[in-house]
Length: 113
Image 1: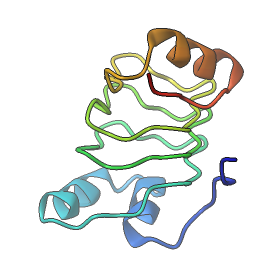
Image 2 (image 1 turned 90 degrees about the horizontal axis):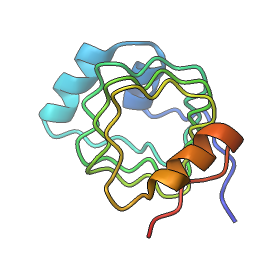
Image 3 (image 1 turned 135 degrees about the vertical axis):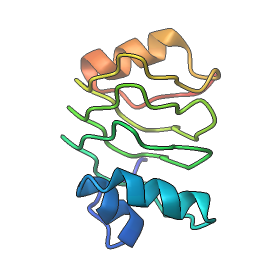
Image 4 (image 1 turned 90 degrees about the vertical axis):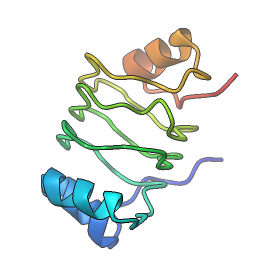
């Protein structure tokens, strides 16, 4: 069973919630790795985030602004994108488009092939 998404104390997670995208991307590029699993990103604007190969397992993106984010190399197993802004988003190729639709429309958690 999936864990409940939470607002963590991880400093880089807090940067994302606070809209500090440039600083987050710089720290990620310098090698820092945040723990973004089981995180609550509800209503957070993540445009401009360099998602790299981060794990967003079981995270909650309801109503988040994900426009243009490249999640293609990320682990999004169990994440939910219900009602999120997803124009221009690259999802991992192992997630079926129907799964993306079902998560967007009904809030089910993303499952991989």
